[in-house]
Length: 420
Ligand SMILES: Cc1cc2nc3c(=O)[nH]c(=O)nc-3n(C[C@H](O)[C@H](O)[C@H](O)COP(=O)(O)OP(=O)(O)OC[C@H]3O[C@@H](n4cnc5c(N)ncnc54)[C@H](O)[C@@H]3O)c2cc1C
Image (cartoon, rainbow, N blue to C red):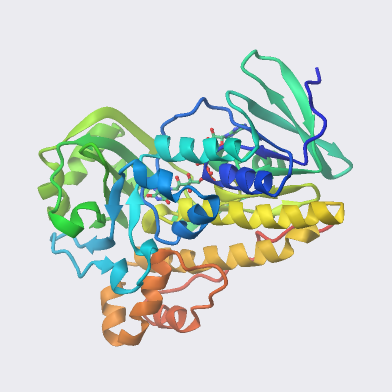
């Protein structure tokens, strides 16, 4: 069956931060955009802690005032806590950056994502919720549209010169193409829940993201949110987490006792009930684009969330892809080759973060130790932590990290497919 399928310039799969950003910016440029989202918003989503550099895409989207009205917990810093519970000097963003972006937020993703999707609709994108993309349409190797199933259960086709895949970790296109390449060393498991009654630090530190170390290459995250809620989770190796039980609530309760800071802050808290588990942690697609299609956000790549880079990369890649797509539509065709620079820039930004993540997981590595030797690199390190990642080299920082930790080779894949 075919359903009002003609006349779109772009189809966006997924209405999360990446898809809503691309959709809004393309619609703002006068493009006819269709966003297909399988869920009904608002919906729960993990990933509440923003990086300061999210600010600039949110500013371009024109949503900062709406965002402030939600009164999400303000995040001024990130802090790292060893197992003995002694907090290292927090990285306060305002000490480094004299700009409103230095204050960022711990958002409730259901509200944040709905705001972004409504913004896309307000700018003229057509949004169809409860509509799942189930396949792609091709002319030769070129993607020319999608097959979708609406809430009435009917399958239909939609065509457009370009499709933006922003389907998150479902990763619709890379799954179909078998393009998912895992980062084996970063293949961890996460278990998390939402809590009430956790202890909060006073003053400026109330909204800090805390990363608390565990044995076995693992860590806890503590993200204080509004309404007295805390998002808390553990990321660690499978063997470590599942060593005596596979019950997520039992594992969570067991691990609270393995870091003094966590024990002090969470032992009086109570889970709202649900525990989530996810594996297959870090991956990147073989290619970020091909003729007629570009991959954005988690649908392209997912990196271990220790530095809260996911939403930033989703917003930024959504923004970058919208600009390339608009320019390509102007010239008349949207080809893989149009995304060569997009792929280079995005892979470079992810690679900087990936090296930080590798360093973080090495047993003897500590950012504190490195900064003690190379004080002059503290600003560069903070730049990475705030998300100033696109178009910056960080050669000295990477070289210094290489002295203290084994650095991985940059991944060769992820560039645009040309003539594939
Ligand atoms: C355990 C964990 C902790 C994390 N913590 C953080 C954090 O603190 N800070 C941070 O910045 N990031 C964090 N992240 C990462 C962050 O959640 C993601 O990077 C971010 O949500 C990516 O945005 P996106 O728009 O690409 O994908 P998503 O937000 O996942 O949005 C994709 C959308 O596509 C829809 N969709 C999927 N398939 C289809 C389909 N076939 N048809 C139609 N619609 C479809 C989905 O319903 C969804 O709404 C974390 C991730 C994990 C797993």
